[in-house]
Length: 455
Image (tube, rainbow, N blue to C red; front, side):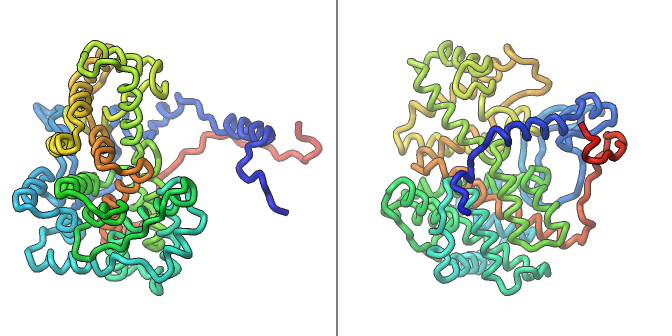
């Protein structure tokens, strides 16, 4: 029998869901009583130490007189300040994603020959199995590109004769292949959805092995495959700023957890994709863009500070946009004075706004960045400083580049696959135990009753 109501939520399901919810609610005071670190964070929001890593470091505080004092944030990849890395290859007028991927995977910056060989390796792997686009990506296209990406990654298992081999050489080969094809899987998935659901023309451009990752993303996405040097370089910077952020973020921790079970690479990366898809993790920049679209519709004078301030207060009072009481793009679990990724990004964003004619919108973003901390301080009790995070500007960049909303989070994944790969290699190299956190049972013993004796 064919189920034509596969997605229907029946009254019976609603009733059962309510019962399940009631069974699952735990008295919040018990978390304090048993000193449970909810979300693996302490009462101050600091992450509980669960591992060690040499891959990256996030610094947002310093110790003065024995006390932790917030400082402007800094991000390090394998000991190198990200700001220095970006300034370095930008000064030499090179693309950096491939170079920094090499750094994350192998611990050192490549010399000229090493980088050239690594770029060739990525270019050689930047292709999909025969008929993969037709047989997998074109079948049942999803409206969510992260689901499409995860499905495609899991399907790659079937094309790999050594899929379950967790030796480091094989895992490295798998990771480099995934780094190379993530843009293809995501963008081809979007093209299929755009064609079948929206009736748009179908474009399946082949990548150019001689081009950088950022250039290939624009090449295979756009109907005419054209892009400006500034567009490609800013997308390259965006990829680098998103490719890694310590071992404690949700998707990278997921990579460690799943890898520790010694499962295959495709399963581990698909799990990380599922984590990144969540709006609390990878989807925040979409919220920022939509919030600003609503702001620009409801604020008549974008240069009027008081009018913009009033709108921001309405956001906090749940009277505007999505009524969630949030100003998206502000706040971070670690950074309080500044997010280095947002600081680095901002100078590039201004250049792109001038090329694209978005100076007025950039001025509004700049105004909101400047006044929001004081607005939040007036309305809420702040335990630490609040600053813009990388999502504040990344969505604006993608909008100026003409990228569809459906690809905002997949672009995050195209970048973060480099970090996930480095962390998977690190977990396997250290041959640790399976990660198994403890949960304290707080239920009580019950006496079994025969079915006809139950209420």
